[in-house]
Image (tube, rainbow, N blue to C red):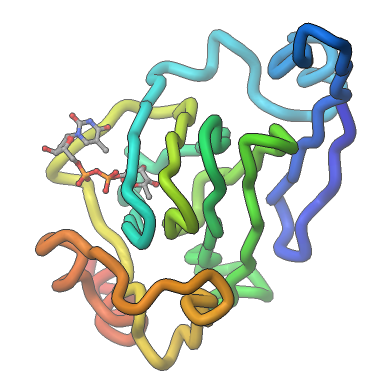
Length: 189
Ligand SMILES: Cc1cn([C@H]2C[C@H](O)[C@@H](COP(=O)(O)OP(=O)(O)O[C@H]3O[C@@H](C)C(=O)[C@@H](O)[C@H]3O)O2)c(=O)[nH]c1=O
């Protein structure tokens, strides 16, 4: 497994070692001592596993849960490919408000460790199965997030590159706060 730090502190992209033969392929997606060595959470810290499937063009996000329910997420795409986007929402971070994008594909098996303190989302660039482990349980009242197309965040979701005309966004995600509103909400909490 190769571990590549993201530009935003705390993010880690994981690339498994892939063994291919005439039958197909094999790789280790989790190995406790290897994860410990890399400073990543291990099995007992992951308390919830999630699995979603999305049509091409579905955009989910950007989601987070406020403290003390913030979740770290180890995410991966096991069918198709997604553009994964994270926004740094740690007020004391020098990169507060900045985002980073990762192309996660089933073929490469790459994963992303997103620590607590980020809003997270993705767009399915083709039919995609998305699976992830979380370090905290789902807590509906603690749900929050950011509006995916807020100009202030300035995220290019690369629709043109992948032939997506209009993203499919849930009603809930269409009314998430802008970056400006999110900051004032956090400030009053
Ligand atoms: C996230 C979640 C949802 N649900 C339920 C609530 C709802 O009725 C239904 C669908 O929920 P959502 O629309 O929030 O699903 P979705 O938009 O896929 O939410 C996910 O998006 C990605 C980007 C993330 O980062 C995740 O943490 C999570 O927020 O599933 C759970 O039971 N447990 C969970 O952990």
